[in-house]
Image (cartoon, rainbow over all chains, first blue to last red; front, side, top):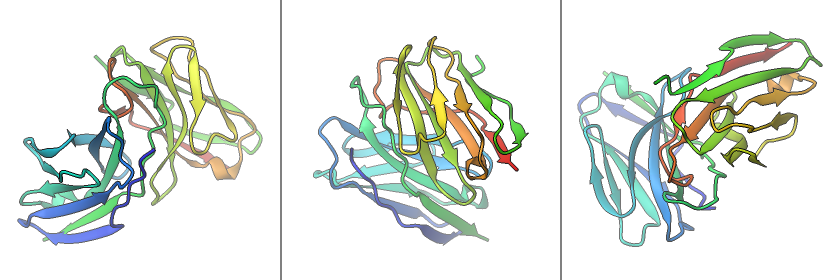
Length: 113
Length: 115
């Protein structure tokens, strides 16, 4: 299982771009990288997923270097409502019997006015 | 399409009591998971299932049991409740044809207090 390491917390101000990096040195060939967002008293919510290079959707971008040993979640122009905990997960995307999907400690992002 | 439904949302138990947290999904998902989250902490995997009739232990299985008799339901049983089991419990599932790296869909959580 690929273990992930993220910063415990980050602070930002409204309107700034926020980049959260996750390390996953033991990522396997079939593993995908997925990021989740969690607000207090709610279950985590899927943000974005990728395998390599860059993925972009309406809320975030995910940058994955060629060696795939790390990934960076980029949140453009954050607002107060982006204050949440962000989790990086690594696991097989297609098939496989691996269901032991472990969340790390996550990164608590605090956005200030 | 209700997604992942957890019941009850809140429950208070006395030490030594037992109960079952219910989880149901109507998305025909193969994979289902139970996590617990203590205040201010991350999620810990309790048990997971890769399909009906197949379950396996996660990080913190002690004090819990699960069953998966159907694709839709994945109940979590607490036997002899202890204060250390006070937590918020989340059930999740992931789509068919994907492994554990697929998108997880979470329920709203069940807040359990053991006194």
